[in-house]
Length: 104
Image (tube, rainbow, N blue to C red; front, side, top):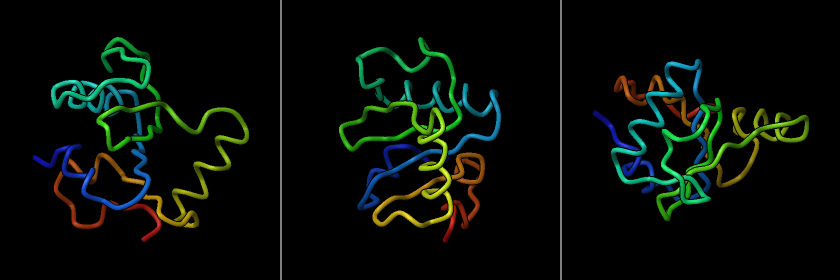
């Protein structure tokens, strides 16, 4: 299975897109198992699931894309319009599909 840590090899900002609450919960469990924490120091499974996360190279994560401005920014990232940013379709990524980067 592909890991979140492997994604840290990407050179740029990493965002994870989750299609539903089950996938979001799985992402949080996997992140915690790999030693990732939320930006505030909490364990990922202690937080409510979200559908879009930023993954930082220091092995922390935070929800992203909230509110109107956040939603607009999320869509520009997902469409590949933001330089040095990657939107990862988590379902495709963990299933082993070759095409898992949105907008590419």
